[in-house]
Length: 324
Image (cartoon, rainbow, N blue to C red; front, side, top):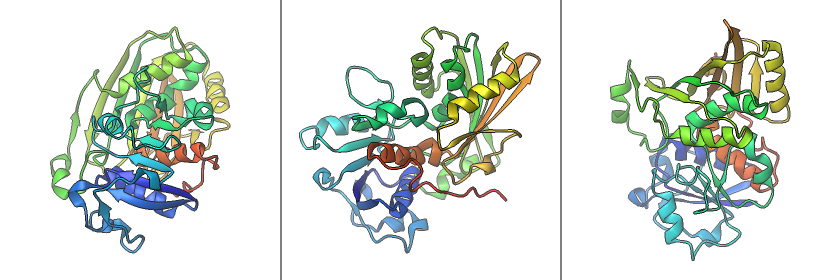
């Protein structure tokens, strides 16, 4: 049985992660850390967990009592935490960080970038520390890495992405959602931080890739999900492109190529990614959908945990879409 702890347990992503870990057949959730809620029941904040667990939030982080710890800290908090506790972290403790602090790989840390469809082999073999991808980054990379693998990214790439209002660093309070009701807004156009990890992954597969990634991210009033529409010039026939995608994802358990246009409801409440390919006037159009809290965050975190501990990738992630 894998003993798990969660640090920073009050936002929506942490709530979904706690739900997955509570129902995972090979996990015992030992503690959930949250200084601001210490002493309160976890289900008093994450009310959907009522009747499913009896844990209370703790201000402590007993790292020696667990095999894996998930960092759900706000942006910029995970690296200081790891540095501050470096003498307390057991050598064999697995750390899965859901913040962006370690996503760009460099000599300052030993975290492996945790997109399983890209780095599964590295995650399985002698890896202890994992940097979980961002939600937009996950959708964009899954849209493009089969092309990068086949050296077909030879032009500028244009991406429009829209995300729901639930994600990391968002406390489960209705007031935080009111301004997004019946609203759509652009934020961080062309400079979104997730582009750094996207470019890192694309150049890992295609070193010659130096073209622009023009990304327009949007926030909308639906609750959860990420929808991206990506287009670029590509001279290859659509049937050939589809085969490249099917071949690339053939032995992966959560990413699938769809014959029809994809909708967010096809993947909501699941760890799936659906991709639709089309060719219009010589341009390749790739539409991709994921659940922002699951495939875009804690679903991939649990997927990474399964890889680290030698479990089947889908254990604890057999989830049904809420489409109706």
